[in-house]
Length: 328
Image 1 (cartoon, one colour):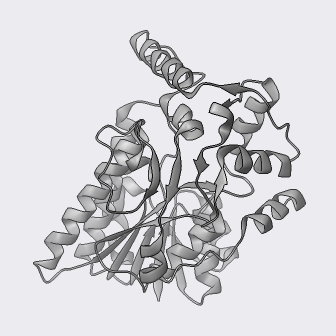
Image 2 (cartoon, one colour; image 1 turned 120 degrees about the vertical axis):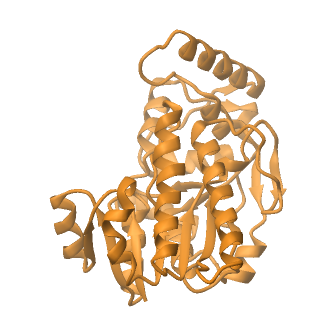
């Protein structure tokens, strides 16, 4: 199968490129720079020069592609709305619409659990849970709107001859070596500002990057078009258990302090209000997204992914932590 991948030099996208090649697919990767061209060629992929904001420029390449795996997105949780509106919603829809017009058969979109996150508990929920009315980050809101637009495109396609099958994956917190969030967690622990909300005993969800890459490859041929799939490690751990193991595996200090979750959330809300009202530069010391990441109980049902994608995590958490310890 000819597969086009975006975000191929990123934390997840690089694993998707490698996994697709290992599975025998012919991989075309969106490349923004000459050095990225060399990177992809060395990996055994074809480099396609361009940017997400100009999908028309590589439309001819998409015309010979069977499936797209769209991983690229600005994975930051504080910034101006325009960053997310352009980098997530507009870029995703431009790519999807050009891909559909050029005859791509399937479009796999890597979304996020953030579309569900507001202030409510997310224990024992599945894909039937409605979107959060007001996601606690612009990132989550943009992913929500991109999902909604893709699902509308999927429905529109069913009524036309230019149907493109759309599959949406919703991984939870993606971890592994070079996890973008790992350095900030380690720094917070070292400075003594990382504390466990309500003792950290609530359920916490995460998924190893290799398991997400596996789900992306499965979604190329499996799954029901127009469906959404939650992707996790399938292992139950509390917030404190998981993050302590993650930090310990990297040799980082493990915090002991506790904080009431209601206080953490309140401080984050007030901090955001002042930061925006005063047009302060940089990122606030804590945001509502940060507070929810640590304090919001999350345990997802993944029966749909197991049944329809035939997704069974290939890497256990114990193996993932061992890889971190070994520096792989």
